[in-house]
Image (tube, rainbow, N blue to C red):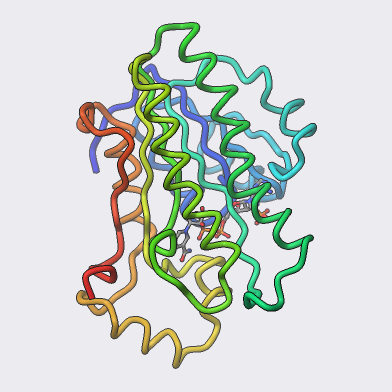
Length: 244
Ligand code: NDP
């Protein structure tokens, strides 16, 4: 998707791999300055070589204090993509406190914390910013061994609306993208069995999973001024799964 983000500064979390990494590349190619936030430094080093000039920030977003130290003074941000997440596999009866806390801290609490830093700055500067929360179709449908992860994504549905409601008067828009399976590291971890993947693909009307590029395109659209009247909403990038 050809969009021009020249003169704008974007922050992308979970920038080291998968959807976040390609979002950074697309924003960089479209002229934005990008703050790339992730946990594994080697990923950020290789990304910085591919995208000269980006600002890498290495932090565990599940750690509130470390995140405050790393991003509390991040400076002006016009576009925010809350993409980092973890997806531990546990059935409902296996859920542990540690898994619950870790998953909610990374997938939901860090979205609140990072968005607060960014939105406060947008309001102070009077910027008409855009925030995209990377959610999932499992915010709306169940999926094997993902009750905690799915619950975090459902929480993002309401958090997205609440943020849109409160930040709308400041002309800050907040939306989500809700993809089906994408065969990134996370996607392969969630569906490790080829037979399960085949059956799952068959349930999609388009008989395929989403590609990373499909998700990135929807993120870019929601960040851009092509979507100026859209807020508190979500784009399903689900190959029709929820229609099946
Ligand atoms: P990947 O696991 O491929 O990449 C996730 C990135 O986020 C990694 O760079 C990872 O770093 C980083 N990250 C994870 N936890 C933290 C943390 N605590 N602090 C900082 N960075 C962190 O995932 P995807 O690209 O597949 O997923 C991106 C988003 O898309 C997620 O929100 C996911 O829920 C969503 N999604 C993915 C789908 C899929 O099938 N892949 C389907 C629907 C939604 P590191 O590896 O170093 O931990």
